[in-house]
Length: 62
Image 1 (cartoon, rainbow, N blue to C red):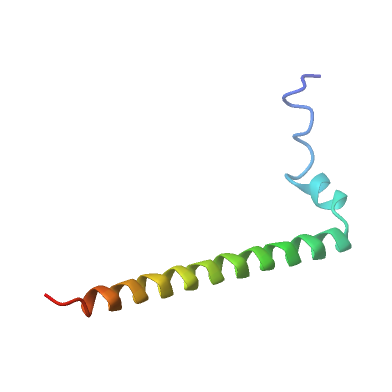
Image 2: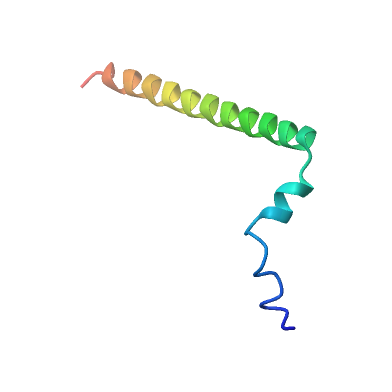
Protein backbone atom coordinates (compact mmCIF):
# COMPACT_ATOMS: atom_id res chain seq x y z
CA UNK A 1 0.00 0.00 0.00
CA UNK A 2 1.18 3.50 -0.74
CA UNK A 3 2.59 5.63 2.06
CA UNK A 4 0.42 8.53 0.88
CA UNK A 5 -2.88 6.66 1.29
CA UNK A 6 -1.96 4.49 4.27
CA UNK A 7 -3.71 6.51 7.00
CA UNK A 8 -6.88 7.63 5.19
CA UNK A 9 -9.07 5.18 7.13
CA UNK A 10 -8.40 6.99 10.45
CA UNK A 11 -9.92 10.36 11.38
CA UNK A 12 -7.61 13.33 11.05
CA UNK A 13 -5.71 14.09 14.28
CA UNK A 14 -6.98 11.05 16.19
CA UNK A 15 -3.51 9.68 16.87
CA UNK A 16 -2.00 13.05 17.67
CA UNK A 17 -4.48 13.93 20.42
CA UNK A 18 -3.97 10.56 22.06
CA UNK A 19 -0.23 11.16 22.39
CA UNK A 20 -0.53 14.40 24.43
CA UNK A 21 -1.18 13.73 28.10
CA UNK A 22 -3.41 15.90 30.27
CA UNK A 23 -0.47 17.17 32.34
CA UNK A 24 1.36 18.17 29.16
CA UNK A 25 -1.75 19.99 27.93
CA UNK A 26 -1.98 21.87 31.22
CA UNK A 27 1.70 22.79 31.03
CA UNK A 28 1.37 24.06 27.46
CA UNK A 29 -1.72 26.04 28.46
CA UNK A 30 0.20 27.69 31.33
CA UNK A 31 3.09 28.57 29.02
CA UNK A 32 0.69 30.03 26.46
CA UNK A 33 -1.03 32.20 29.09
CA UNK A 34 2.33 33.38 30.45
CA UNK A 35 3.47 34.32 26.95
CA UNK A 36 0.21 36.16 26.32
CA UNK A 37 0.61 38.04 29.60
CA UNK A 38 4.19 38.96 28.76
CA UNK A 39 3.21 40.25 25.33
CA UNK A 40 0.35 42.24 26.85
CA UNK A 41 2.67 43.83 29.42
CA UNK A 42 5.09 44.69 26.63
CA UNK A 43 2.30 46.35 24.67
CA UNK A 44 1.22 48.39 27.68
CA UNK A 45 4.81 49.43 28.37
CA UNK A 46 5.26 50.51 24.74
CA UNK A 47 2.05 52.53 24.88
CA UNK A 48 3.17 54.25 28.10
CA UNK A 49 6.54 55.16 26.59
CA UNK A 50 4.82 56.57 23.49
CA UNK A 51 2.41 58.57 25.66
CA UNK A 52 5.26 59.98 27.72
CA UNK A 53 7.17 60.96 24.57
CA UNK A 54 4.05 62.64 23.15
CA UNK A 55 3.56 64.62 26.38
CA UNK A 56 7.20 65.79 26.34
CA UNK A 57 6.92 66.83 22.69
CA UNK A 58 3.62 68.62 23.38
CA UNK A 59 5.22 70.69 26.16
CA UNK A 60 8.22 71.78 24.09
CA UNK A 61 8.37 75.52 23.52
CA UNK A 62 7.46 76.46 19.98
